[in-house]
Image (cartoon, rainbow over all chains, first blue to last red; front, side, top):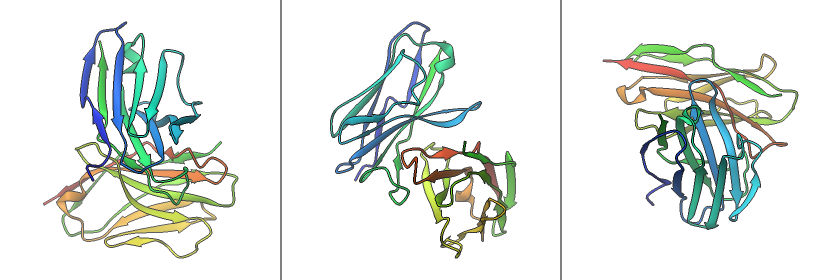
Length: 116
Length: 115
């Protein structure tokens, strides 16, 4: 298996532009997670899906952020409009079943977003 | 609220030596899980080891082992026979049975292994 795939690996954009990050989870995994990593706040869970349904989006910072999972093999995280404080590394992770401490989350390589 | 603290921003060790990374946490829950994740320069987060709070025996995975002190809320990672490939950021993480969707991460320790 190729693991969790994220695209793009790097994204540089200007303030006010729309940014879309993409994730393909491991085939057969039922849960998908979006995380953000910054120097100031470390790794934070933004949202997670189970069976394509958003379960917990309490970590989404504000209305400028939205996430979708139209099918089991694809998810997007969109920021519109983007701001310089959104600059971070965004990780997608997937796990086989319902989120559980015994279920390993497999992380993608992340997307480094820079908003100028 | 649960918190995870890693007080060592950076550590270094010589190849083949042993190094211990520290982690403390705070929770009022009685059962929970603790994890160590490795993030090499490739950025991908990799699970290194997992420990359930109810298990008294410390978890081990090859050269990696933990020292879990529940009363002290301490969870350190020992890397034996350090290898150059161990160079990475190491994150301690926590989750409990009430919030199984949330992994709470520490701020990380950057480990450099020197030849």
